[in-house]
Length: 302
Image 1: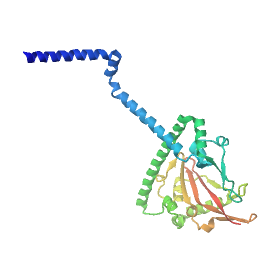
Image 2: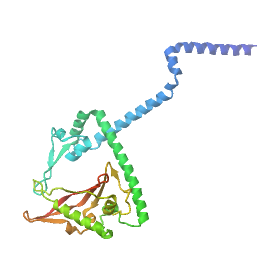
Image 3: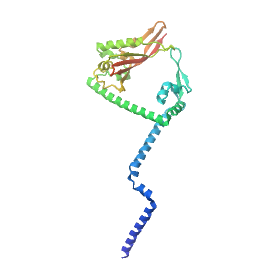
Image 4: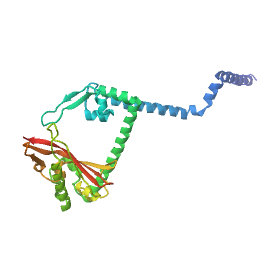
């Protein structure tokens, strides 16, 4: 009997205690505790928000700390990396490096900390983060396209069993004439492109060699592929497309299929010899069949 009575007392005590505790919680607290979203989706949302905030914070901090505060940044990099314009840079102090007769104007360099302050003042912290995120996405997409093109190049090499891949030639800087396997049509085209490039060489107002660029219309995909040393890739699967363009970079002597000595041009009135720079950039827009080739020039002698 005593055992049964003790059991009843314990159950009664638990019920009374439970009711007393429950009443102490209050209506609003009970409602909050009974809401499953506070234990699942709500906490997950908080975690996701926290992770996103940490991610953007890291992205901004990495951008700020990428260069030492007193590190110097060129005009070109300042515009690209800090999302600034010429007008923005005009308000900042700078230091000049290089330049001189035959070398072009000096390079303006700005303090990293000044560029960061100007960028944040112009775009706001959130605006800078948004631009950094967008740039990261573009770079990731570009990396994926490059990987896909690399896989296509490997398949192309396996099928054709040739080492005439343009990217590999540029990377290894081989001295072998790239036009060795060209058709007569492509050889003539290379010769014509070299002649046009030389015609566009000249001087800046400062006396430095100017950059040159030539444009050729009516180039088919097949012709472009042949110029890029991949004549069998008529669908351009092994090339990386950025926007509307395919862009490749090659050693100048390889692309034009000539010896280094054929890259020079003598300017008689100035008694100066210029040479096409070591590399050229080739851009192709398949929608309009336009090919452009650009590069720089170097002074060889007086």
